[in-house]
Image (cartoon, rainbow, N blue to C red; front, top):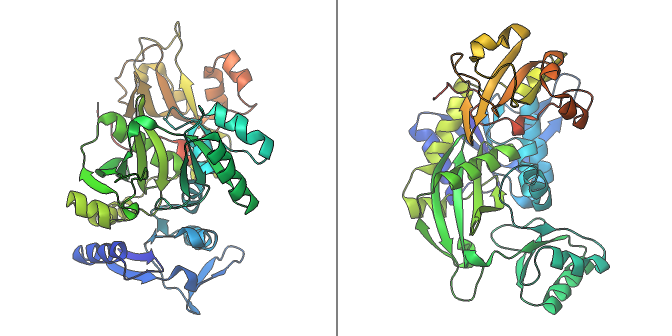
Length: 405
C-alpha cells in the first residue's frame, strides 16, 4: 500500500508513530503538508499538484487536518476522494465532527446520549436557553475548539450572561450546554477504528479544573468500557461518517453522553496510557479497506435508478411473521436485507433461515416501489413521496460483514 499522511507537523508524536507503523508493515508512506497542494478541477479530470508538481498515484490518504485549516484541508481530502483514492475519514465526516453544533444536530436524530444543548443569537434568548438546558451551572463552548480551548464553566446566571455577551460581541458563536455534574471532572476518550473500539482511557481533571483534557493537565488511566459505551462510541463515529475517530464521552447517570468527536485524535496520551499500538491499528484498518473496499451504497444509489435504502419494520399481524427470510420471498421482489435490528441487537447480513419476528426492523436495499409496498400506509404518509434514502453515514457499520448469529 502507498499511503499519504496529510499533516503540517511531520515531527509530532502522532505523525511519527503513523509513519513508523507503516514502515514496520512494509507499506510505502509519505507525509504531505496539506497547505502545499494545488487543486485542478476539470470535467472528468480532477487532479492534485504538490509543490507545483502533479501528484503521483496513492492507494489511500490519512487526513490529519487541524482546525485552523479545516476549509482548505477538507477540500484537499475531497479532491483525493474525487480521484478514487480511499480516505480513512471523508471530507464530509471531518466537517460534520469539526463543527460542534452540526455534530450535535446530526446525533440528535439518533438514540444516542448527548447533554441538553442550546444555540441562540439574540441577547434576549440567552436566559430562556439557560433555563431550557436545566439552569446554572452551564458549560459554554465555542463552536470550534480543541484540547479544552474555548470551553468555560459558568456557576451563576450573571457569570453566564456576561461570558456569552462578551463572546458574541467578538463575533464568536457559542453553545449553551447542560453541565453533567455526576461526571465529576472525568470523561472517557475512546479510539474507534472501523467497527471496533481499539483503546479507551479515562481522563481526570486536576485541582479546580473541570476540563479533563491532557493538555489541561488532566491525568489518565486505562479503562475497559462496557458494551453500552463501546456501542455508543462506534455508532457516533459512524453517524459522523468517520472510519477513525476519538470519541469523548461523559459518564452520566443515564449512561454515556457524547461530548465531542475528533477526526484527528492524538496518539501520545492514549498510547502512553494504554501501551497499545494504536497507530498500527489505524494502518491495518486502512490497508484492509484498500485490499477489500466496502461498497459505497451512496455511490451505488446514484447510478441505480429506482433503487434505494430504507428501514422496514415488521408490525404485529404481519404476513411475514413466522416465515424465514428465504420463505418471505423478499429476494424475489429484488429486496436485499443488509441488517436485522432485534431487541437492541444488530445482526449484519442475517442468514436466510432466520425466522422473522414481530417488531423486527430490517435495513434493506432494493427497488423503491417494492419496498414502498411493505411500509404501512400511515408510515408512508409520514415519509416523503419517495421511500426515504438513508445516507452512507446512517448505514450500520457492519452492514457488509458476515452474519455472526
